[in-house]
Length: 309
Ligand SMILES: CCCCCCC/C=C/C(=O)SCCNC(=O)CCNC(=O)[C@H](O)C(C)(C)COP(=O)(O)OP(=O)(O)OC[C@H]1O[C@@H](n2cnc3c(N)ncnc32)[C@H](O)[C@@H]1OP(=O)(O)O
Image 1 (cartoon, helix red, strand yellow):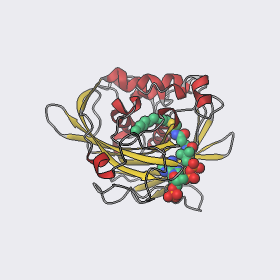
Image 2 (image 1 turned 90 degrees about the horizontal axis):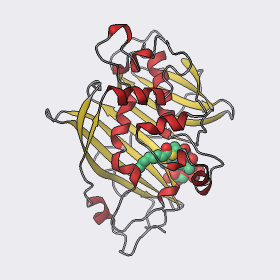
Image 3 (image 1 turned 30 degrees about the vertical axis):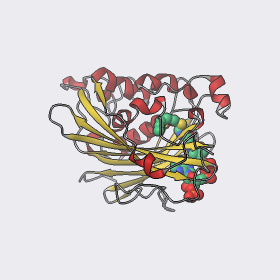
């Protein structure tokens, strides 16, 4: 039961205004992020990935991976949300889903204004599902750069209402149709990459300092034998693989990304991403090789691109 002293009132909760925030980043942040999701992790001169961390071939600025956009949604969210009539235990929070829409290539440095709103809440009985929408605008021009929809799975926070129906999701037509249906056919292409035992320690430097990913005692309290990998780190590995295998290495080809975190990943495990090309949509599924378990699935929409697959 997740209500606090005041009665749970969905209208009050959904009308609750979350503060605007500013996010400024530069090339160093983009490069640290790329290293955090394994860029050049196997080969320091990997010709597909050096451009994300270095001015490869004299390029003017480093190239920014589209999943860097997901960092813009974190900001105040990782420190917990103060919501009227609704409480949850932040140590039991798991990242459930992420949806990203990108309207123009991410610049190598920018100052952005984030407008954050509560997009949805659902009572699943044993858990509550909370969705936050973040629209990021370039400061100065006011142009919309990207949108993130972050879904948190709040274990133990369900049972606050009499309804399993979502309390919102009315700002947009549908919840992006997750989870995706994985085709029964052979994938168009497959990419394997090993994460490092220190992967979460490196990834956290991009701004998500939740001790669930670094502190053994905290992880145990949250129900895990050891610290787990950030969901957005796994997503970064998967989308980097799709850019390499389907988008011919062009990070700007990615228009939208959707992913559902199916089960936890431990740093050091090997990620195998299977991809099915369906027109301009890539359906993907990432498995942990050592446990033969699907950990992430979703889709990526790409801009008009003739794939060689
Ligand atoms: C305020 C936002 C702040 C966000 C900050 C981000 C902080 C980052 C944290 C992390 O990175 S945590 C690490 C990444 N995440 C994970 O490792 C989670 C992996 N997934 C799981 O462990 C499980 O999927 C789960 C989330 C524990 C759910 O499994 P469970 O067996 O308990 O659920 P089910 O019984 O299958 O389903 C119940 C109900 O919930 C729906 N659902 C299931 N999984 C998800 C999901 N990932 N996202 C959203 N919804 C999910 C499922 O459809 C069921 O609904 P109904 O079908 O009954 O309507």
